[in-house]
Image 1 (cartoon, rainbow, N blue to C red):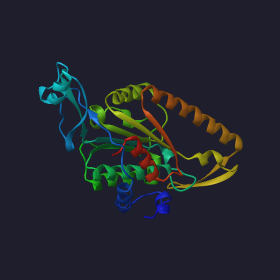
Image 2 (image 1 turned 45 degrees about the vertical axis):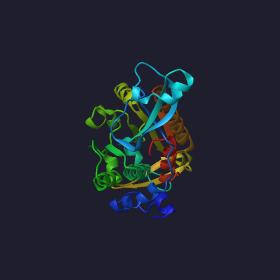
Image 3 (image 1 turned 90 degrees about the vertical axis):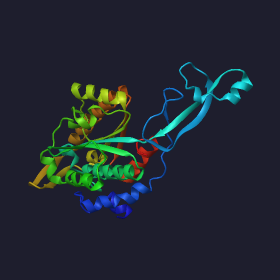
Length: 305
């Protein structure tokens, strides 16, 4: 799969063999910024440590709750005041992938469909998680389906529903509400995870907002949105749209394009405001951005390892 083929695949419907080839891109994304998970006390340790476990960061004055084993006696003797070694540790990262596609995601003016780009990105995230030895759980909502996995799956088990999510026929069953923000075992008790939400949906009702607030209280949440800016730049005229149900004619005028763009921007600004209030990263990418480019940006933010 060449660079151009990844950006603009021959078909928006991806086969499982296409996901196998995404592993190369995941492997060569680069290195993630180093992130430490700080212990609540100098002596606290957590399970599932990677690498060498604890790493000393600095010294500070001894506190009553500190573990006596972490007192630096040499510095204490020199300064006359008890000093404690403060540690950080690299935990095994746990990632929760939530993808929710509307019927409008199965469209694109250039390169491919928005749905295809989301599915490619999900595949790269899955590969990268496996390559880094991290843990992944997921929930995929598309075409009337709701597929989830609480424990780290074998990649083929994930690639099969991702392949299904790319099928154009899914546009006939997509629901407008955000299914991924309804109670589900995969996210109900999620704690200390990097949560990546992939969706083209923009409306957050009160129930979804409350559930998202709960999710953001205990996890770091990244909201990834992919749009097609060319949708609002179509030359006025008649366009023939082909789908699995047949062909139809769509009339586009400059006025209708302006109204659609204004409505989209207003809704998107409202979404951004809601997410900012919940301290959630709102990341918007154009369809022209290759999937590995989006993944690399997520890597720079620490969303993927």
